[in-house]
Length: 173
Image (cartoon, rainbow, N blue to C red; front, side, top):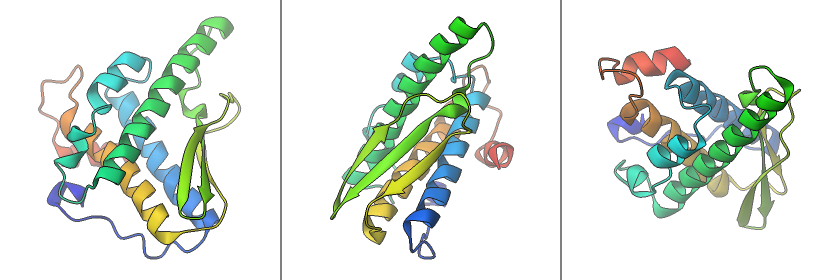
């Protein structure tokens, strides 16, 4: 949708539990595309290809707020990649990249996105704490969707560019 200039509709999301599930789905798509583009262990590469808010503002559905949320997700994923790599070195096996957990704390119209400690037992996820605010949720979800769309559309690591947007989307779905 973002690719064609249309913002996704999240009108069916009406509570924190549903918001957490939707955002976890978007986070899992972000993990999938980072793995697909071979960026999961490269914190500096994640920053390089997804840490600039101008990259997101080229999409007509983006705003300053949603682009900032996409950059926040990029930073969280880069920190997670580095922590997972270090943990993998310590335990002597592949690191648990999907163990990232993100907490979104909602405070009466304002919010904070926080990273929790790396948890090798989890499959990753997002929790929504505080009162549910549909506009706030839409901004955060659109930021996550912008990140995934940008990564699918513009990052061709170890790829000659022949993978199309549609093929990449099919791969992560």
